[in-house]
Each structure stands twice: as structure tokens, then as C-alpha cells.
Image (cartoon, rainbow, N blue to C red; front, side):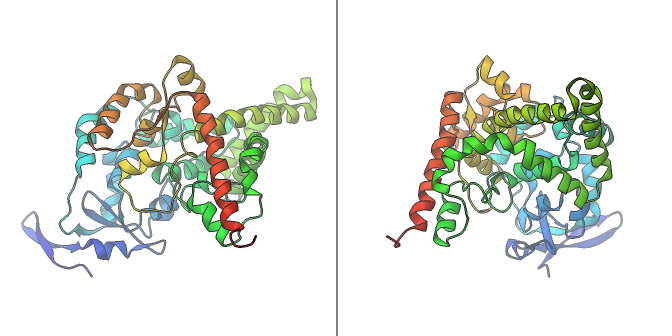
Length: 386
């Protein structure tokens, strides 16, 4: 039960609003009992999680925590989303400090820039009103043109942005069947004799498995996702991709030729996708959830690569991962404009702003990081056995 309370005027009446301590709020951190805090207000999202467009796991990952920053960064139309919050409101946080120094500086100096620009289709923020037009465009682009599920992409990508490099939350680091990332998981797996891969060689077989991610695992995961959830709308768009592929190229290449083209194209794309996305994450901290504030979590788990015409073009501005993670709704061509402000903010508050000098250096760090993690696993696994 909430302790204390305060009087809130509602017309001519006064109602008592419950107030909760942080100790009590932190206990509501389960899928079956989940509270979150937004700007000092407490919301019970237990029954809402399954209806959440970004998926239940995004909300549950912030159960018992302050989700103000991630909510602000990942929702463009605050008034529209706020309508869904009203029935979930249950009270206030006692002695809530609405903005720490990170939030204050970010909101005043930088965040306003994000509302002045349009946003990428992938983050559903190109058109207004937000919901219908953006969802339809996203279904069309990622479904019909790429052969993937829009809801599947949202499920994975929103979790990644909400808690990047957090074990058991971020799906991008849930790859223990093949790779062990960071320093915590390799040591844990080694001590408990878990896993079946020779992880001390993962920096070598990484080159062999990288091209297979998109044409094999992602295709399987997509189909499994839509079939399990009976997402027939996404399944329809996915099937239109393959229909278009065979209908247009089948008469020229034949069935097996179309399949071969699909696999070769996806293998090449997979190489680009893995290296350009993971160069900014794999070499960084991979840990269990420590309830870090939004700003420090993004800076600890991401890094940039120096900007140049080639680097920006080749990576599709994924070399600005820090800015992209701080403002996932901001279009990529504006990252260079706010990067100097982020750097100055990090310098002011003594937070490391990592920027690799070149793509070669960033790609090399991926291999070196995998080698280092594999060595940790090997030493922990065979400790005391020799």
C-alpha cells in the first residue's frame, strides 16, 4: 500500500493521491506485477503490457524502474500516447526529482532539435498522425521489399534500444548458443561448464557464421514469430516479397536460380549488417541490468566511428550510434549536428564518449573483443582442470 498522500483539486472536489516510496515501487518488477514511473507518476502496466505496440518485454524490462527517459526518446506524439496512460495511473513517487543533471541538460540543449525534423520509416515517425500511415509504410517497406515482419522488427529493435547490451533483455546479445560477449557471460558460462561451442575460437568462426545470419536464422525467426503469434497481416506482406521475387525473376533464372540469388544477396547483406551494427556494440560493456540512467546506459553500450563521406555512406550513418541511441526517433542526417553537443556534455560530466578513428579500427575491435571474451571463457572453463 502506498504511504502518505497529497490533496489534488478536481473542480470543486479534492481527491487524495497515493504516494509510493522507491523501495515499494522496485518490488513491482515482474511480468505478472509491473509498475513503471514516468515523470514522477506511477503506472501499473501489468495488464497493458500485452497491448503495448512495442511488445510486453520492453515494458517489463523497466518494471519497478523510472522509464521517463526511454519513454521520452521512443514516443514522438506524447499527447496521443498519454491518453493510454490515464487509466494506468495509480499514484505519485514520494520526493521525486523530476530531472537529474543529464535529463535537464539534454532536454534544454538538445532534445528540442529532435522535434524539428522528420523521422525514418524504421522508427515509425515519418508521417503524421503517427500510427496508421507509419505502420502501413513500415509494413510495405520491410515486408514487401525486404521479406520481413514489421512487428518482429519492432519487437527486437525496441528491446535493443530500451536496454542495449543488457543480458536477458537485449536480443542482440542473446547469442550464447554461438557467441559469448563481454566479460560477465564468458566467465559465468565457463565456471558453470555451459555451452557447446569452442568459444575460444569464436573470433575465427565469426567470419564463417556472419554471412548466414540473414538468409538462415532471421528467415526462420521471422516465420516462427508471425506463425506463433498468428500475425497473418505480416505473413501476407512477407509472402508478397517471395511472390514478387519468383514472379519477376523466375522466368529468367528459374526456381533454383531465384533461391540462389536470394541466398547470395542475403549473405552479402548479412556481412554488411552484422559488421556495421555490431562494431558499435560488441566491443562495449555487456552486463546484467544495473538500472543505469538512460544517458549513461547508452554511452556505456555504444560507440561511434569517425565521420567521413565514405563512413557515413557505407554505414548508413550507423557510425553515429551514440546519437541514434539517445534519440532513436531522430532522422540520421541530423546526427552530425548534435554530436558536438553530446561530446561537450560528456566532457562536462566526465562520461566517456567513444569514437573509433576508422571503420578498420572498429571492425578490428569486434574481432579482438570476441577473442578476449573467448579467452575468459576458456580460462574459467578449464580452471583447476589441468
